[in-house]
Image (cartoon, rainbow, N blue to C red):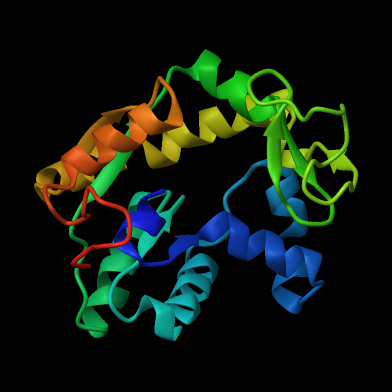
Length: 207
């Protein structure tokens, strides 16, 4: 939603890494087992993937980083990389959701094997169980979406990622967002926190 409003790409580290796994690239083979366990890919590796993506022409006027950085070291590497490129982070948004709700959302997620459309068996189920409404392909649960893996990912988050709240708070660019509610409600809170960086009207934005 924010990507559409701001007309800048959503750069999701997880999507980039999973694409590498699907395409069986050298990177994909390197990180496949790590992703399946719910562990973090090496910091330098992820930063290289992000930097390569930011070279795309669609990221020239701005971008939204999603799921990255996930550790203090990644944040420091990101800052150094952006500084080399003459770029700075305008705002860091922390979308906060209770652990029980996170488990419900992620473990209920099902992904289309063909077009990658996502559904949730508890919150947004497809009309026909196990079948994608867009292309008719099979839906499946990714290994890193199982309840056991989600619980592990929460442990990893608390140990590695949660300290970023203090890191970006000290930089005076952190906004904490209540992530409970409908997507539209959460979007409205995020747009309000961006203080004009994103237009409230779809189709127009400064950056």
